[in-house]
Length: 125
Image (tube, rainbow, N blue to C red; front, side):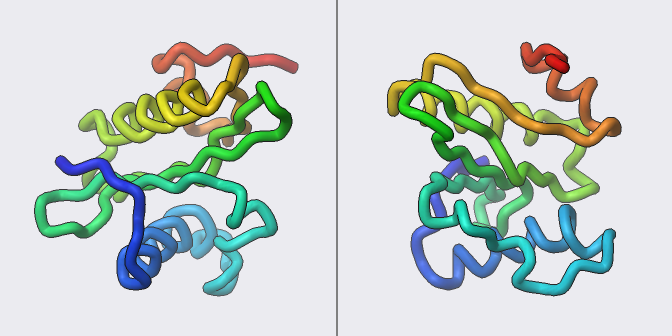
């Protein structure tokens, strides 16, 4: 596995395609809807097989000087349950901490709450 920041236009295309297919297409959202107003402030990462094709992606941005937020995590269906999501989240946490985060938050759909809890996150209401 290779963890990297997408850099070339082709890598960003692959990174965004995975985000769209997993996070937007199931809700009939159009291509392009995976890009939002936080895109330019976020640090994206992708986990790839040796061929450079992403199998897991995510990004982190800051809400304040000390609060980071993890967003847009997606893992190819056939790779779920194999540790790819944990690799993504740990790398995003590392980036956030290196940039000064004292607190890391995220929002999760009900079907992935257990995943985040298994990675040390707690539900706050």
